[in-house]
Image 1 (cartoon, rainbow, N blue to C red):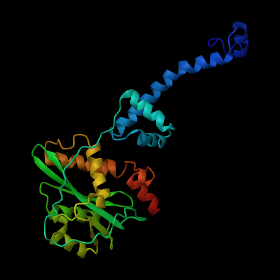
Image 2 (image 1 turned 30 degrees about the vertical axis):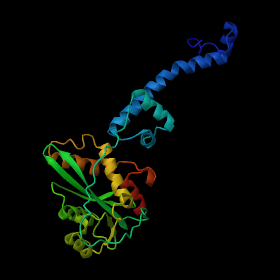
Image 3 (image 1 turned 120 degrees about the horizontal axis):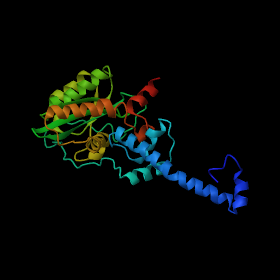
Image 4 (image 1 turned 45 degrees about the vertical axis):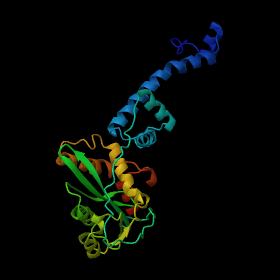
Length: 279
């Protein structure tokens, strides 16, 4: 019937051969299905690799949709399961906060208000560690609560006030020295230091700090490090601090800020979301 479908009508052949037309169309759809699955799997795997194995099925479906491929999330989920495609998972990491000091602290002005209508109204900062074959190296970041963009960051083999200050200076330079920004951090000694507090005063930033031992007061900053530890392949296994820096640069500047989709900002990347706000 399939071979002669252009010469005779399907309904005529079905009557002559004493078969149902519905049976023919059911058979036809069944022989096509493996081909559709195979082509879908190729597409899904290619996008998964392009996203460096960092996306689960939800974000992968959005990424494909943005490129003109509309698939149900469950369809993508089944394709990933068939191919055993598993996104990177978070690894546990230790706290770097040293709050056992007698330095002055800022009040918790942010008070878990993690939303912001415009960029450069509220920033959050934190520090995490990365292990290399030559010892520990540390990463300090500053994140905008409106766009979720990493507006500033710094790395050093020393966890000290200068590390925190360099990340803040980077943010101030990149964002053209905005005034009145709420800068929220934990109450670690690096952020309570005189040099860091002076930097805030000099550039008219409003200091805010989490309550003692309460990581949820700085949840967005903590969340970024969770994403980093989950999605950066080879994290905590670098050969040197220099190679760790290169990997962090690629992750933040080439992936996280310009490309990574965030559900909290409508499945857009931080830079794209910022551009839309400022249009």
